[in-house]
Length: 128
Image (cartoon, rainbow, N blue to C red):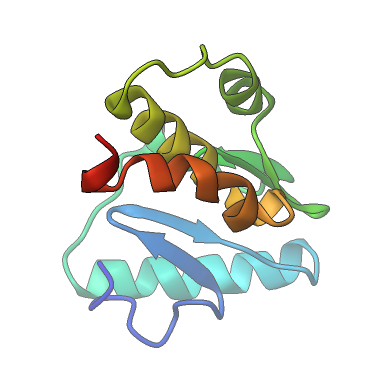
């Protein structure tokens, strides 16, 4: 998919595996133009879309654990709750799971590295 949409990434669209997000700030007209250019590129490569998996011209959407909208990118409430309610880890595997889960949202947690450092230190081989 990245090869087919080479040159389009971060201009009219984002691609992750077989998911494509086409974004616009200039209104529906601009969005339709960008959508058409992406669809033409996919068609030229012989690729088709499953209409039931497509969402068109939406103002907000969930994507890879985030809510995307004109307001920006936010973590999903249900996943923030999962981090907040994670049971206190009692072994290295649970610590690792928690650090990875919380780390997924590191961009929203100021000084995440400093906060997580004591936990990641516990994961070093000589600590187990």
